[in-house]
Image (cartoon, rainbow, N blue to C red):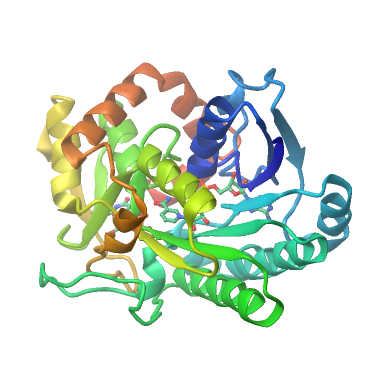
Length: 338
Ligand code: NAD
Ligand code: TYD
């Protein structure tokens, strides 16, 4: 049976990969990509699927109630897969307000719209950062029962939206899932984030800023494995359940940067230790047992995933160059003028 799937934030990194994945895997589903096209949104990544029968783009602001409610009434979506957000921790430190508007208010508007038309399911794509930070003990992990203790304005806004999603399930019976994923990487990752920033700067022989001592740890997951996890949760996830998504690929930031530099044959002298991020979380690490029991298994480990990603950036220089030299060039100059 044909189903209408609304993907919010489908012009961004993960949403963009998810749109590709769904349009190609499910010709029987109609995929609607709703995105405001902020600095992080880019439609050129969809030029290969634009002409497909089951893909449609809608430009809209998730926090614009006057646009969102009538749109839901008109289209009567079956599923909402909600990625749209302000997603960069550094930006949430310099400008927290837009994070509150987009991530909290925007989610609430979507929940109201979904409740009004009675969707089959609302999937809220969240982050492990809502759990706060772990110490460096390698035997500690975030589980779905770890208390929410967000430390940055970004993670606080995501945790707030998670709680709103939970409340619409508990109060109104809205069918929901929340997924909390570790750090993603892969094709179309916006070049302000650590991995694409390192690749693009190394290729241009520019200094690579490593915050603090570079010993903070992130748990890296290839974006395609994240897409497969959301697909599984959408179809098989228990109503109201939260699922952590991560593949046990913990690396220090310095290990990540060195792996990229060495693969590209560049000098480690490009690394420049810079002032630490305010409130910089020490370590994130996911226990994915619950999702594995549902049937999920990642296809990439860090070595195969980073090799694929570096190759993609080498082959798609045009894509990331048009971003770092384009309309938002000043974003990169301001933050990384080392
Ligand atoms: P991104 O910044 O690359 O993309 C966000 C997209 O949302 C952009 O296309 C942007 O135009 C759109 N958007 C922003 N404000 C909007 C608004 N008001 N209305 C409509 N669209 C709007 O983000 P990403 O890295 O792809 O992350 C997607 C989701 O996954 C986010 O919710 C994020 O919190 C979550 N997440 C990300 C990671 C990661 O490592 N990137 C990890 C776990 C969870
Ligand atoms: P980032 O990609 O911003 O993701 P997040 O903050 O959501 O984990 O950062 C990943 C890690 O890399 C984080 O510990 C901060 C660090 N980092 C740097 O050392 N230098 C940089 O230029 C950036 C952007 C991040």
